[in-house]
Figure 1 (cartoon, helix red, strand yellow):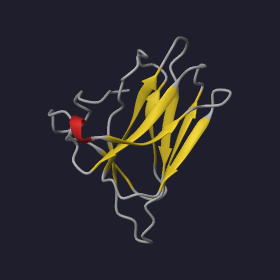
Figure 2 (figure 1 turned 60 degrees about the vertical axis):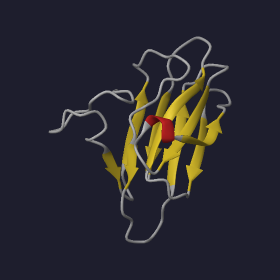
Figure 3 (figure 1 turned 90 degrees about the vertical axis):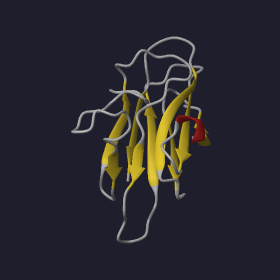
Figure 4 (figure 1 turned 90 degrees about the horizontal axis):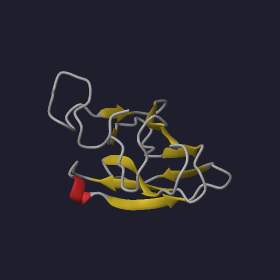
Length: 127
């Protein structure tokens, strides 16, 4: 999976300009487990799309996390690395964890805030 700051597939080769826009019913894999794990690794950003019902809820899932791993869910209203702030820190139990966000941050991403050793976690978001 692409990581933050690396151009994504699409017609625009500038990093960050081919963002996935999640609308209700969509899901997206932020980390698929094939990345080289390291503390501070950030996923690509996704944008919160329009909801005809007004619901802003996005649910993040972490699977397969080794002991000592934490994942920050970060949000920003501008897709600028320095502007992202932590909405919640997921501390998986037995490798599994989650967080639901009802906020209004326009852009969201996952970031490994702590990593010791072992396999890379899988992080998904559903709307």
